[in-house]
Image 1 (cartoon, protein in one colour):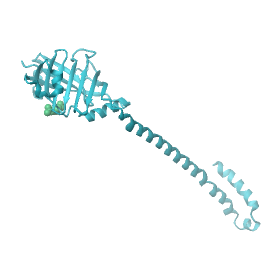
Image 2 (cartoon, helix red, strand yellow; image 1 turned 60 degrees about the horizontal axis):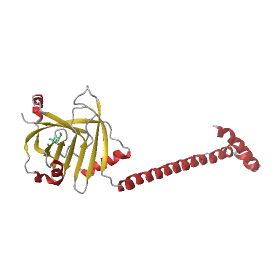
Image 3 (cartoon, protein in one colour; image 1 turned 180 degrees about the vertical axis):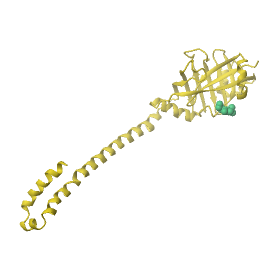
Image 4 (cartoon, helix red, strand yellow; image 1 turned 60 degrees about the vertical axis):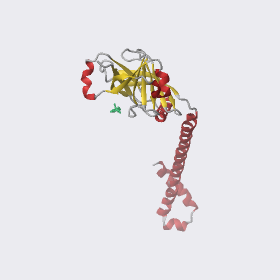
Length: 253
Ligand SMILES: *[C@@H]1O[C@H](CO)[C@@H](O)[C@H](O)[C@H]1NC(C)=O
């Protein structure tokens, strides 16, 4: 709107230099012309500036991306200290939000993961060392409180493969924190003693050597109610995925 007031003035100025013949013939068209010629100029400059700003920020973001994703992973650390906050639906609403800490070692060449769960801040869950051996398809829980080992089939829907878990934890380290998560429960029942430790592979063998070692079977979901009748249950809370798993291990009655 400010242009419309100044434009006729400058139009009048330019008119003075024009011949009197032209002025007499079409005074209105001449007056309009300078306004039309002036308007597109600032718009073009704005577009150019905006384009430049967008381009520059794109360049900066691209550099940050390239740096983060191609240079940082070169530092191939495979040991992580992890912490996750989850909604405790198992004992809710008594406990509500819980925090779980653990150390994770990922061995990409040997295709296994080792997890150490320390003594939790509250009772109820046992400290443990866990090995997920993807080569053998086995999981071993060393319950530190009982000093006993439990072997079960590796459940790949609960445990992320080493490469994927590594990527997840690298992202967590970078600051893309795990969102608050949830807990699921799995129930296992002891089926018998393991005598031949060598069949468990070198990593689980090393973890369980010299300890009472038992085989576990997944307990049928439908028989869950019976759990209260079996008093000899204990649990280990751990995570090797985007959620927490409580493995409840029950002795046979
Ligand atoms: C693995 O865990 C999921 C979720 O708890 C369960 O539905 C599935 O039956 C398990 N698979 C095996 C082979 O135990």
